[in-house]
Image (tube, rainbow, N blue to C red; front, side):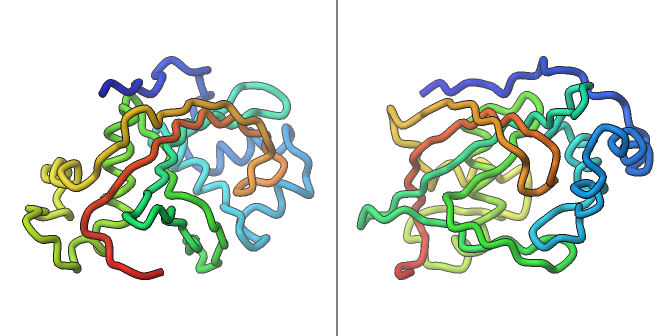
Amino acid sequence: MSLPLRNPSRHPTPPFATPQSLSEWLRPRLPSDSFASWGVKPGTKNVHNLWLEIAEGETSLADSTPPVRKVEVVIVRIIRNDNKILLESHQELSNGAVRYRSRPLSEKMKPGESVEAAVFRAVKEELGSIIKSTACGNYNLGNLDNDRDSNNISGITKILPGSYVKKVEERVSASYPGLPACYLLHTVDAEVAGLPAGE
C-alpha cells in the first residue's frame, strides 16, 4: 500500500527564535480577547505550545492578518474485532487541564513523514503502554520505548486497504482561539492487535 508523504513545501513561517518573538508577532494580528485566553481558558494551549509546534515542523503559519495555522493530521480509526471504533476520551494538557475529545486517535504529522509512518507513530505514542502491558500472543513488541524499534508497532498495526481519505477543513482552532486553521486530514481505518478487551 502506498500512502502519500506529508507535503514538505508549505507556506514559509516567519522565523521565531523564541516564544516571546512569536507572541510579539501574533499580538497585532489576532483579536486581543482571543489571544489573551490562550493557555488560560480551559482546553486551550499557550504561545509556547504553538512555538514548539512550529519549531518541530508540525505547524506553519501563513504570514497574513490574521495568520492561518496550517497543520497536517493523521486520523486513525481503530476498529476492533466487534466492529467498535476506539475513541480517545480525553487529553490532559501541559497545564493540567483536561480536554474531553470523544474522537478517533489523531496526531500532527512531522515534516516529510508518510501517512503510514504517522499512523505507526500515533499508535506507539498513544497506545504503546497499553499494548505492552497486555498478553500479545506471538507478537514481538520489542522495546516500544526505543525509537529504533518503532517498526515493531507496524507488525501489530494493519492499515485497512481502501480506507484512506484525504480532506481539507478550515475552522478556528480550538487550541488557539481566534487563530484560523487549515487542516489537511489524512484518515485511515486500522486494526491493532493486543488491545485489551472491554470499553
